[in-house]
Structure formats: structure tokens, C-alpha cells
Length: 75
Image (cartoon, rainbow, N blue to C red):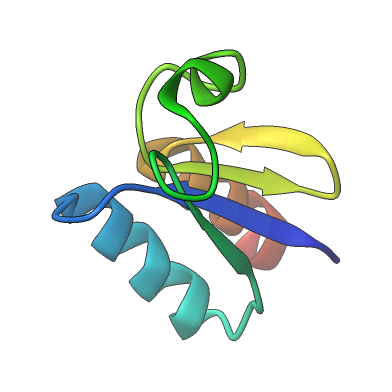
């Protein structure tokens, strides 16, 4: 499974998403918006940070990641 998480510094939901991925022992690549990708490029993917993409499919932000993890691991 290939997971990419788009983040920004000082984003509390990014920290929560990172903690959830770590708790589930899911390896991920972190991409910083404004550093590794421009804001304009990022807005074509998802309107807010964080954004988690699994195997090329946009899962969404922290809330959607939580639902995805429940469905995948506990559902």
C-alpha cells in the first residue's frame, strides 16, 4: 500500500492524521504544501490540509481518514 499525506506546518489536523497513521503502523510519504508542491498544484488535489492519498485514490482529510481506517481495519 502506498500512502501519501499532504501537510502544512502548524496544522493540528495534520498532526492528528500523522498520529493515526503511526498508530495503525502505516508507512507514508509526507509532502509539504508550499515546500514540496505549490499551493496551486495542491488545490487541484484537495481544498484543505491534510489530504491522504492511498494507492493513488484521494481518501480525504483527517475525518475521512478516520472513517477509511474504521472501514478498512475494523469494519
